Length: 232
Length: 52
Length: 229
Image (cartoon, rainbow over all chains, first blue to last red; front, side, top):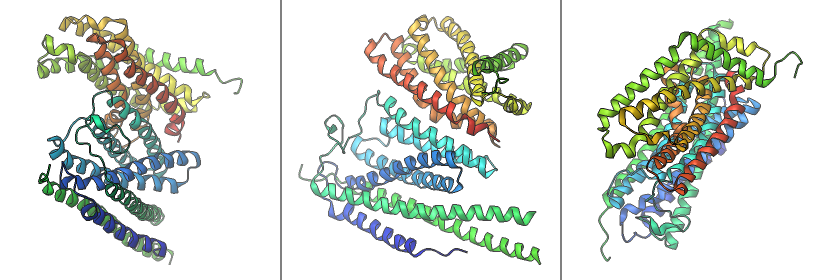
């Protein structure tokens, strides 16, 4: 049985530290925002998780394409890991957004392009797991999964563009069109620092979780293989 | 505006949800890993017994 | 290409012809889609209280919801028939390009959907005294939307029939991916009904065309991976 590589242990420790640092920067270091008060502090985790969530979905689509070309099961494991972790992070993004929206927009949810697109993305990847659950043959499961992540990866940006035709109230914090949106705020230098720290921290955590999940995927395949061997 | 609107309860709720979700996910990975390792051991035992 | 293999076009139309001939004889797919569409419109009538004011803004939405639901019914059935009677294996063994199978199935699915639309639209016009839906622009959007929806739908139904949970899986897989077509179509056709300026309709129309092209290309490219054994 392969033992845990040292690099992974180091990465584990690093993730815990960076989560702590990001929390410190978000809760203590960053100044309190004037109009919304303390709740604005969820913003740092909101953008951090959103970033790794999107990163994972893009990586999954790419891994899907590579799998379809070379049919190497390692890419399938990579794809599943990316989708699963991103779905988890995206869930946090959506919940945090909702918690922020309640005091800022006075509602838990609006059918704004970003919110709606996020919800649809989440649904696509839940459908992805339902699709995989319905297929027994691992090779076919990998093939269909790859095709579906590819379709999802292409449809999500178009979804966003279509929904944007209806009006938006989501603030654009990165970039400079925030004037029209409600609840927008200009970020001070310390806020930008806290945000960048959060990006970096979640990237490290993401890589760490990916590594673990890929190892579990390898273990799953091994168990399945052995089961077949024993039952014969 | 001199006084901040008091929205700290929302903030606390937000961070609780974040850590809870990540915690549950990591726990689920830990449990899956443990179960798979146990399965693997049993299966390897069965495999070696079969060969004898 | 081997000289004995029929050309892509010929093979595609052979499949379309087969599907239409089979449907002409049994009529089970079209009748199911039609009755279902009627029922959906009937339910919407009571659920939304479709009076004159409301009707103007929701007609496009009601029609598209109806077609989307009826469409999944048809897509599921059309692919399940191939699978159950072993026709799919026969088609795959035939010396034709795989893309002929995709285009053949997509075109016959599109034909079924358009037939249903051609019957439901006049019916809706009579029931609700709504003649604005006969504008050529509206029908054009309907065609564009149906093409995009069927292209992805054909690919996904080929996937869903091969799974354990096939009957429930297709709408779950299809709807989130098809959201852009449905929304763009609703936006564009709604704009046409309410007489919005052309500039307002142009953006959703462009997105609809982009979606159609991209998804026909993608579905066609990956279809091979979905049917291979």
